[in-house]
Image (cartoon, rainbow, N blue to C red):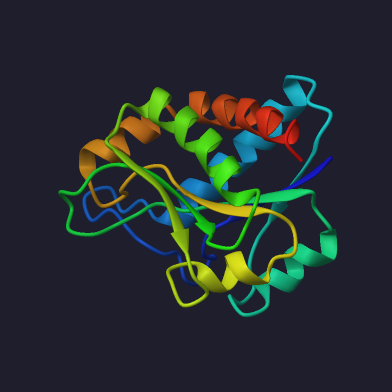
Length: 179
């Protein structure tokens, strides 16, 4: 089974940033995805975990579609006002598998990080991440495990990054049973 692990944002446009640590969404998730791939190999996962970096947002769905994954997870981190905290997963509102994948990932992330459960959220094509969720052909979700601009959230996520990698491998194994 092929699984696309999409690193949110890109080197030239790194997404949200924590002002105190200067950690960016892209840097955090690029490292996390690398760790997930290493953990998958170390644990003997039979899945082909494929890292996907974006060139442009408009071209990203086609880049994912070209590798023909069975499902995809796009890695992000929320940001708002440095006080909001929590975990959520976004899925396309017309997807059959999206909410099922989102529930599995949300459960795993909440159990590990112990941050407020902001639930899974259906997104339309006009909503946040909707273009990607609508135009990728395989089931896809966007994970937002924490708020990167919240120092406490970032500290927890950073301290548990190794555990997060293991957690995502376990979640991928569970999701693969549905696909």
